[in-house]
Length: 301
Ligand code: FE
Image (tube, helix red, strand yellow):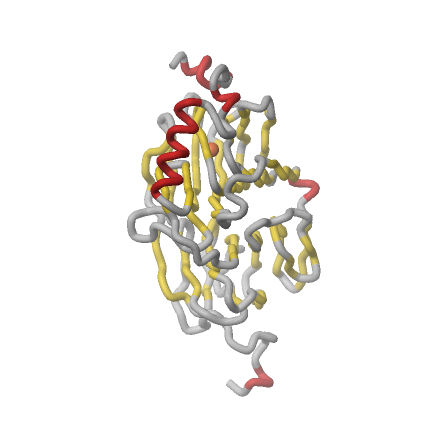
């Protein structure tokens, strides 16, 4: 096809270089997640540590646990999750809501489904650079109604982070990140720029789409697609139903990663110190000493 006929402003669209199906695994207390990034096949996709598609119903959930050295981004798809932390920060995030939590030097919290039925969502862990790992914890929370969204030519986007189709998210990303929730109608086409040096992936939520190259086969729900180099992504909906997926990209940190479960630092020495800090409730974990969430009382642990 001649350059002028191309229905896109991209010079070098990214192709899909790896594809995974996220299979269910047990996490937390009786909860099941489909983990894609963070599995043994893909321990790290700089700056992303974990991507979980979770599906939880009471009494299962994620009772009291710590984090240090990165951010957890929870985006609800269905139902609701109540979170509570050792600072007294508490709330419920519902379908379409976002919580961008910077754990920094330390958070201990619980994340439990609220109400009846199954609660579903995505949780992404974004690594922090060495200079940001020990900053004060911070929350950025957006209700569904406050998330920037627009639509054009059969493509709708909710801009969780970064910008798309002329719309900008208010979320501040310490590690520069884009996070876009797209719904594409049958026969519609998307062309989304992505900064060329960033790592980027797609996670399919509903329907089937053709990603990266018009000649590639359709991809359905629960699949993670890692994108190769280029300046953006092209997506076609050649099916008879809408497709919904998230496109996430981030600037690689290029730093060593030392991880022990929910602690992510740069060196093993820093991990050892973190284990001590958590055990002795010091250096950011002071309030963990006398705090227990309501979740643990409910579970009678
Ligand atoms: Fe957590």
